[in-house]
Image (tube, rainbow, N blue to C red; front, top):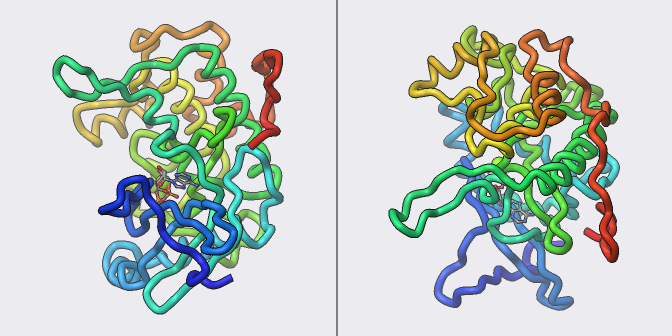
Length: 302
Ligand code: ADP
Ligand code: MG
């Protein structure tokens, strides 16, 4: 298909509210002109890529190509908890990805962010334990699927986990910085990640200015995510990035920031192991899956 077949739509008439804006991309709602079907469209400006490539981000084109290859060229078989992308398109100025549209502004991060009515400030609060179990069970299934097929996500964090339009299931997005362990001729940028979710080995590489890390970094990030879902805050939050990195490398985190279930705490400790080889794999479903309540299917109806 051509991008001309689609039109941007939005709830407010005067402006196109994006669903999200990243470093060099924005995601908007669009509609097929004839069928009326709605999608999420990730728009990447070529000019922005060129500028970024000249400055700090020489591999930005790899990043774009990576996401397209993983999500639209059958590199990764479809999974209910991974965003479904349909087509990559381009015109003179932009690259486009057409994806399933999920709930607006409903990523896991906004689930734990709460705006106080009294002072207008945002506070991070933990989720309900039963929701956490559903989220983690589905997220693990998505991550295990990636690892089984030789794909490392490398930017697992609550902002890259959406809730689906129907049913509130978890959907993993943003494969721009993923790594392909099988077809390694094309990979995302060498250094990636978000400081609070970075593993000790990634921090070490970062300090050396060195290269990326493999699937054990995703396992670490799972520990950070599970912690954050209970506590609201991430385990290595500090006044400065330097202190944060120090805590990460020493694996220092405290249980006092939230009210954790014992089995969840156990799992967090198994993922936040400083030595990568000691971490529990994503396929180890030691945690009991959430009970399926009547009238609800688990994972299917996305
Ligand atoms: P970036 O690489 O710029 O971080 P993402 O793919 O993470 O780009 O998308 C940026 C934001 O756009 C996400 O955090 C999310 O809020 C929103 N978004 C992305 N894809 C979808 C989608 N399929 N449905 C709804 N919102 C989306
Ligand atoms: Mg993102």
